[in-house]
Picture (cartoon, rainbow, N blue to C red):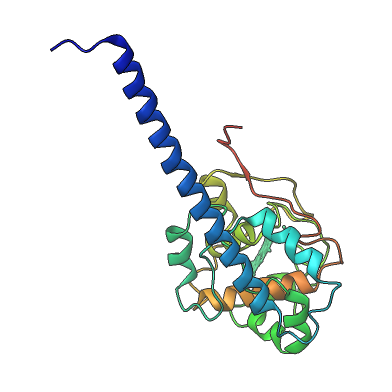
Length: 221
Ligand code: HEC
C-alpha cells in the first residue's frame, strides 16, 4: 500500500491545522478565564468606601505585574507560614492585603500583630529600630515583594540565602534575621504583620510603586 507523496503532504497539513485550532481554542479559553478573574477582583474591590477613581489605575498595574489566576494567598488563611513557603513556589506568594494603608488605618491595633511574635524585641516597639535594623526606612535588603518579605520573616535570612535568594544590600547591622515562622501561628497573621511593616515605610517604598523583586542566584535569564 503505497501512498503518494501528495496525500501525505495533505495529511500533514490537515493535522497541523487541527493542532492550530486546538491551540487557538485553548488560548481563547485562557483569556476568557482571565477576564473572569479580572471581573471578580474589580468586584471585590468595588465595595471599599475609598475605592475611588484615584486607586483604579494602581490596581490595574498590579494585576499586569502579578499575573492573573494567582491562587495564593487568601485573607484568613490559617496555614502555618512554615507550611505555606514549602507549598507555594518562589515568587508566587501574594498578600491578600494589597491595600496595606487602608488596613493600617482601619485597624490602629495592627502593631499588636507585629509585637505578638516578638518582632519588636529586635526592630523596636513600632518597628523604628532597636538593636536591629529599623523597618521604617524604605530600604529593602532582600527585595520588597510580598513573596520575599513572607519568606524572609518565616525562614530567616540564612535560609533565604540557602534557597537561592541574593541580598541587594546590608543594613547598619550585619546580623542574620532569625527564622520566625515557628512563632507566627497563621499565614494571615504574617500578612497582617507585613501590611504593618509596609504601612510604616515612606510612600513610594512599596509595591506597586516600587517593586524590588527577589533576586535569585540561579536566574537563567
Ligand atoms: C533576634 C532579632 C530579630 C527578630 C526577633 C526579628 N528580626 Fe527581622 N531582622 C533582624 C536582623 C538582624 C535583620 C537584618 C537581616 C539582614 O540584613 O539580612 C532583620 C531584617 C528584617 C527585615 C528586612 C528589612 C529590610 O529593610 O529589608 C524584615 C522585613 C524583618 N526583619 C521583619 C521581621 C519580622 C516581621 C519579625 C517578627 C516576626 C522580625 N523581623 C523579628 C533581626 C530580627
